[in-house]
Amino acid sequence: MRPIVFLWAIFIGSVAGVLRQQHTRAIGLVLIGLLGTGTIFYSLVEDWSPLDSLYFSVTTLATVGYGDFAPKTEIGKVFTIFFVLAGVGVLVVFASEVARQTITRTEGRVEEREAQRRARQGAVGEQGGEQQEAETNV
Image 1 (tube, rainbow, N blue to C red):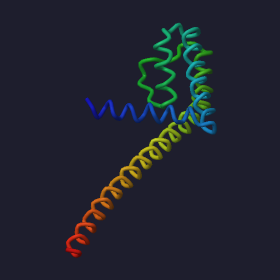
Image 2 (image 1 turned 30 degrees about the vertical axis):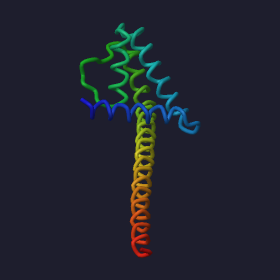
Image 3 (image 1 turned 180 degrees about the vertical axis):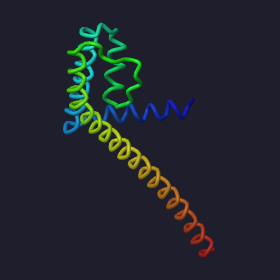
């Protein structure tokens, strides 16, 4: 259970990092706007619950397409065509930014730990050198 929580924490932190950065915030807001638009549209036009509408929007943009939901109305089918064409690219760019953010954060942590390890080794090495010097002076 701990690894899953840890991975979710990393993912949420990376998504938040993408939304915090000015140069990547727009793509996140566009994605949220698309998902909101899809949710509202399918709720009103296809008469699905908001949760079902959001679920369909996410699985459609992620190109999963389980097949458990499909638009029945003509306008719903036309909307879905344009929704997919606009949304898949946005989702891919957002996912790549989240991945980049995750890699950057992970590299930073690794470098920080490596610097701490080197500092500890240097401190141990200095203490060893002081002991040798003290023994030589005796």
